Image (cartoon, rainbow, N blue to C red; front, top):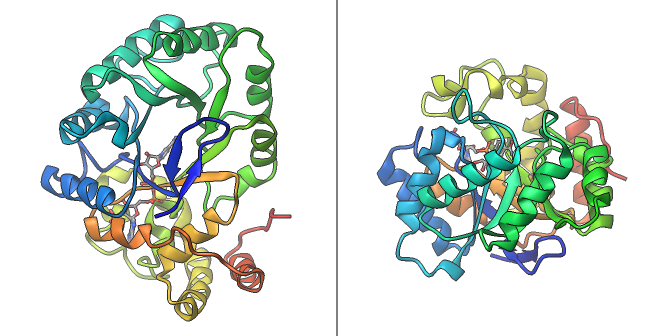
Length: 319
Ligand code: NDP
């Protein structure tokens, strides 16, 4: 496993990190979830991402129990707030940030997280109030650094221009071979501001593993077959996309990589990306995906990938 600096922070994070949306504390049974986490540490993953809203607190509670006993400095822990935890608990007001961060720390059984992230921008709270509350939490030692997820360039710039508040060090956008939008503006803007990217769904929720075939039903043990998805993965399960992705298979094979490894190495080719946050329902997936770290894709390979992606209906935005 190789490691990268998270933006201008002093956090060193593994190129592959482990998330807990739809998996731990919910969709994946406890023993298997623990096995995934243990395998992650075995292969050198040191960065764990969660959120208060994942399984309504249960993902954090699972991590709190599973991480108990490990030296606190041996892993980098990130969580988030914004989405509703109850009809009255939502958003990024000062009161909510204090309440939600304290609740996250209790569930995670730690006195601080390394990274506290705004899960989205809160248009109902003045930015000054949100940034002031985050700054106060940081100065109290409840988090070491601040981040955001899916903020627009304008919102990112507005936060960077506010006087007297702490700066963000991380951005968490969706980014994969099937979702390239942040390459256009978010990556370059954040690079100028010293903000690193920790990208979510780098395998397009498993679609880039190659297990979904055009014209065939999803494998019964996959996320797409599971009721808990509610159709969110559906946008990627398009026959043209799936057929196009099959053109990536020979490229991966020639390099001695699996398809998920190729897809993750492709995400990591961008130095703005500090870490690719994978999900995993089985420990074997963790180990396989970790194998993408340190793989360098030559320009000729990147060109072949680009052609395959255009064939899958993905417009190129890379310079
Ligand atoms: P991925 O794109 O990595 O998809 C993960 C899923 O793909 C797994 O649960 C598994 O599903 C399948 N998979 C993974 N590896 C393999 C493999 N080697 N072979 C076959 N199938 C594989 O990421 P997620 O969509 O899970 O997102 C990752 C993390 O990003 C989340 O846990 C969360 O921390 C964060 N996130 C953040 C968001 C935000 O708004 N900030 C939004 C969404 C996620 P299965 O086996 O069930 O098919």
